[in-house]
Image (cartoon, rainbow, N blue to C red; front, side, top):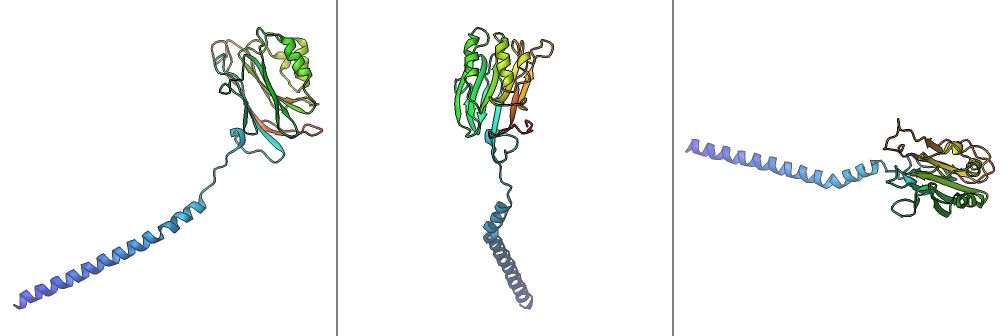
Length: 232
């Protein structure tokens, strides 16, 4: 009887200890669970915000600067794209690009898009381009991108007009070259925003065409002199 009573007592003590351990663990778990939202809130407060830049630039533009990105066409398959202040002005999706030179005009002070046109430089009338360039108002930003062939119809007058907008490569622009450019009507010096790639069978990425070019940067609002600002 004594051995049996001892065993019952030990079993009772064991049950009490096990119950106490269970209750302690349960309470501890609940306390952690109750604190979980605060822990999540702390994590959220430490999260690094995602910075979304206009036109998907690699870094945001400072105040009083306009963000832009220009991509030339790829061979004669994919047309060019122009973005200004997060607005896509021209693109294949908008169905407003064409073979030759694609041009968008933007007010250099307000950033408002004035117009956009494309000029066939393979079989079109170059006089239309000449008139368009001559009629550009003072203080206008000019965005340009090539597609397929920007140079066959190019003549001396056209090259001179493009050079007056700040282009350094207008005199070299020829058959199936790749070219992206941002200049201005009243620009006194050469624009820092320009890329050019010559059509060369030995180095062309596509059969018969060089690779597409991309140009992005921050252009200042219109002022008397173009500051020394490099493209990104």
